[in-house]
Length: 310
Ligand code: R5P
Image 1: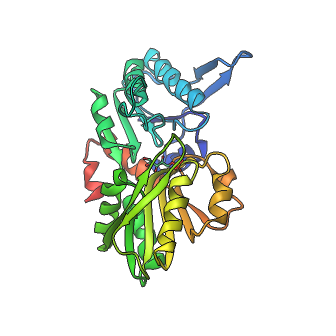
Image 2: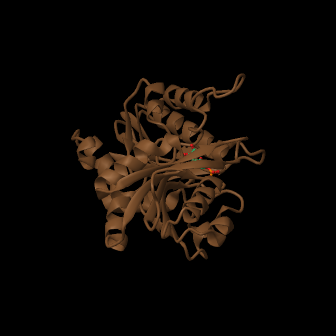
Image 3: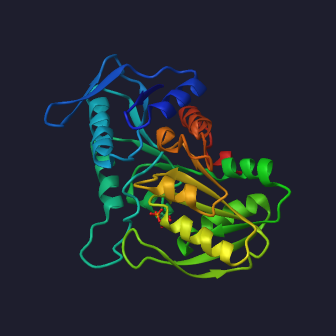
């Protein structure tokens, strides 16, 4: 088994490599003067099972192309099999046509990854579980909830906690975390008047005097979470703590969060945002490396991955 990293999140790849006590494959990913990506694997990988780690995070188009070209290079170098480890699966939010004449990017990206030559995909908190069905190869979707639950139990265990989904689509995720913590669930009724804009219509459940744990898969502009947190405070919540797997944190999201009523935002390192969050006192990053590393180990040994979440 060998591990290869793309450029999107080398920090995470290095941590996974350390966990597995397996060094990263020597490779170069460069750009031609016109921006085209060039990949070269500098060691023999013939007959090896390769785990290629690459998030489709910003710059999403470059990182996606890097992922596809790396798979192609591995296939043409006679790797025995190729597992695309995509901690952040970008382009996943367009998973159906919500209005006429739009693309379904999650399906197209799934097709591209399979067509390039991946034999298996490992990812973390897919935006929607059904994206697994867009592939005809195995997909292991890992969950950050156990990592969040451990952190919450350590930091907030004496509080009167309730788990809150920031929109109806996030109900299953919030319920899963609530189950691990043995607490109730509330749901924010969110409306999107336009892409990138969100409005809170209602809150289902009583959050008065409670420590609210808002949980989501993605924080992008921060609008969904900041609006939900402010509504929860208006309704008498004691504190709002936020747990989000993928810290996309575009534009002025970090500033927005710093100024918001959110007591603490916890994200994972599926996206390398170490520079962005460096100076934000109310943002904390937990690493997902041991979870991904353990999943890689189990896949390599043909043992159960789902047992990790029992
Ligand atoms: C939407 O369904 C997702 O789960 C997130 O809530 C959304 O992508 C967050 O985006 P933003 O931070 O821009 O509101």
